[in-house]
Length: 130
Image 1 (cartoon, rainbow, N blue to C red):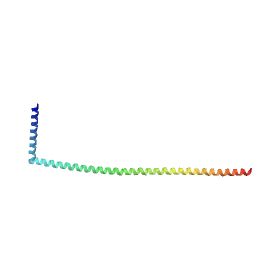
Image 2: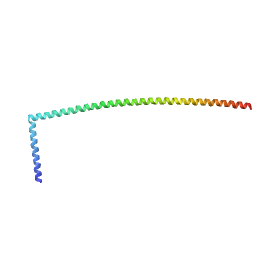
Image 3: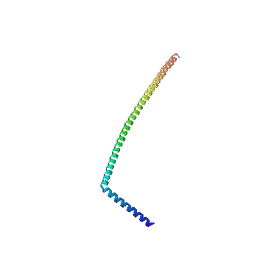
Image 4: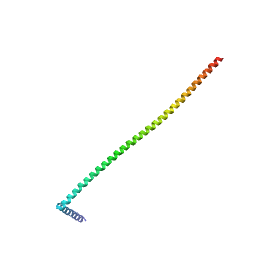
């Protein structure tokens, strides 16, 4: 089995050498040189296409990011403005309610003061009568 393996490896080595020699011979012929030039040209074209496509994709991604950034800023400003408007509405309602409560409290204090004045007069009048 060992000899068979050596023989198989030798055949593979010789086959590889023959194929390599044939490829070298072919690539040095005018047709082979033409094929090599075509392969080099196609490879350059593919590289340029890949670079161009990558640049376009980068530009598109940059534009989308900028658009999203502008959109997010606008939405954030809208939210801030709406919040500010709501704050002003609530503030005005609370201020109005506080003024109403203060006015009512002042009215009651005035009523108490009038009642105290009447009570003082009544006490004074009753003391004068005794």
